[in-house]
Length: 258
Ligand code: CAA
Image (cartoon, rainbow, N blue to C red; front, side, top):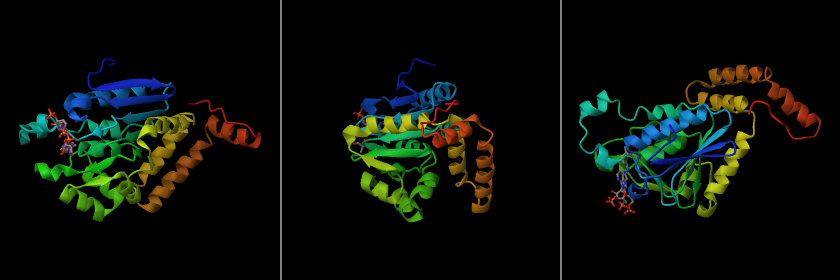
């Protein structure tokens, strides 16, 4: 799919950039937008010229949550039968590195979309929160789980129970975001970071991502064993030979499998 109504998909060098684009609704995540993001990620995953994916919104809003107007009249049966929100899991399952560049509101589903990326770069105007409780629901795209893993029980519980927002500084202190940058520099900075990643060996970046993600799924001993086996397997790649040879020869590595 190349024609999108609610997102803009661009290829900037080896980085695929998905810009959420429903400005009048502060990028609220309706079904069309969800399906388009899922399709765009699948498209970029299949594209050999792409080594990293950046998801961003506007300066005012990354996304102000799932679309409340679309959800308002849903019944339990609608939600259950359509398996409401489950397509987002396909974005979380992307194997290429996925970065969220967040400016303005990242609330509810917006915060959850940012958290299902591999890491978040936030502008100094970013606001994060899970305000679902004020609407009589709870997070539905993994917020109660990923926020808790990111910031710990006390703060996740407070945010989910009160619905209050965190500003960028609090989010950085709590470990939700990797870095804060001035709003005017967000896109350039995030694109530069994504490009740095996209210039690495793609299979090795995918292995690094898989190893870090494993830490959320298993015990420390199993996680270390998994890491060790994957580390061993890196020696079967041409890119390990190139990376180490380039170091010894005092030149930049030219990875083959990008
Ligand atoms: N769904 C649908 N429309 C939304 C929306 C949302 N989540 N958030 C904002 N909008 C719309 C508003 O309805 C408004 O549209 P109209 O002009 O047609 O009325 C437009 O975007 C601009 O919004 P505001 O006028 O409210 O802008 P503001 O600057 O005064 O406030 C805000 C900004 C604080 C983000 C406020 O819009 C707000 O509170 N939004 C809802 C946040 C929220 O509750 N998100 C969670 C949704 S539930 C969810 O996400 C479930 C889940 O787990 C996935």
